[in-house]
Image 1 (spheres, rainbow, N blue to C red):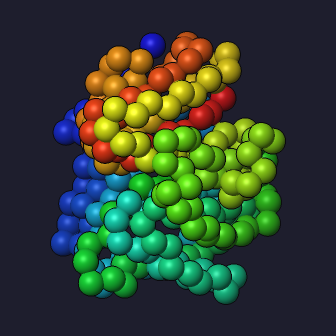
Image 2: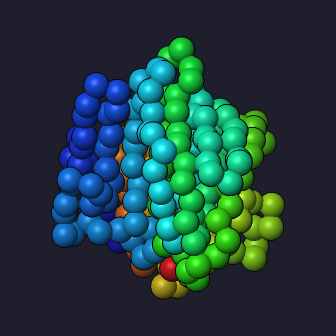
Length: 232
């Protein structure tokens, strides 16, 4: 089964500094049919204006993955971690027993991010934060694990769940394949460009839910950047 949730039909929030689209129920957006996919609870598409961001706030027992689509995001937390994550790179925060952090766009232009929340397998772990550069040239034409709790992805940023976030950049006409284990599911979003998934078309920033499919073939109709979550 392949189900498309078009970008225009996502939940939304807008104020003077944040424009957000919600793939799943979040904050004031509630859709009982879209409460997540397995342990994947949140996939937010945020545009943050220059010089603004999320003030200090707390999280517990959640794996929070931030993928920067454009610009950069600057993180600071009560553990002393501080870093700037640029477009194409990823940061992971394991909230665990509790973490206080702030995220700001210190750039001259708007920053665009995907923020993905995955419920952990175990609660009460020691909180941590880490960011890593994933040069796009190294994942051109192939899916690369960016954040994962699966044994087959030792080079990815670790998370506390049997799940993986993978990304690829594709030239027009290029295809990548992903084999999906039985009982697992995929959630896929083209960060840029338009694609087909097993022949089903998906536009930029649409959400694609995939179940009961053994092999997923992703073909770029235009130059594309694709992010997906493989979850149990």
